[in-house]
Image 1 (cartoon, rainbow, N blue to C red):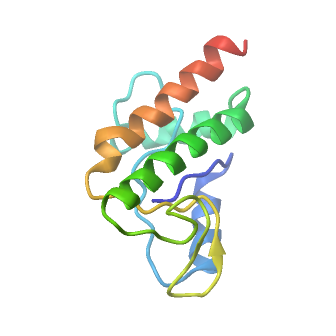
Image 2: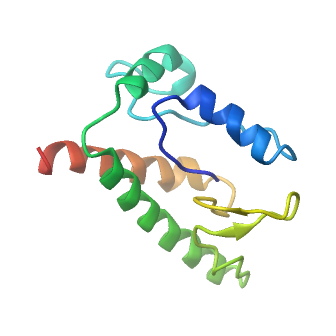
Length: 132
């Protein structure tokens, strides 16, 4: 799972493909979502417009969600008895291209739907509400 921030997500995906061409990325979501959409597939163009404008405190939002996702991914890895990279947290050497990718997490199947999306949305709301 790769999490990151960009005001131009489509361009960033092209960069990612160039940096590590071994895998085709699958976009699960683009945040923040347009206010009337429930998933990126239903409102991708609205989400892209929001992403291009950016959001206030986006650096803090990214940092807070990455800390929590890294912690949970590390706990999942420990529960499975599988320590990956730096204990499954954030920095991993890619087995395909040999580079160290930041913001890359190994999570079990279904984790995105179970908790990752909620973490991203919760920290986005917190940054919008508390830091205003």
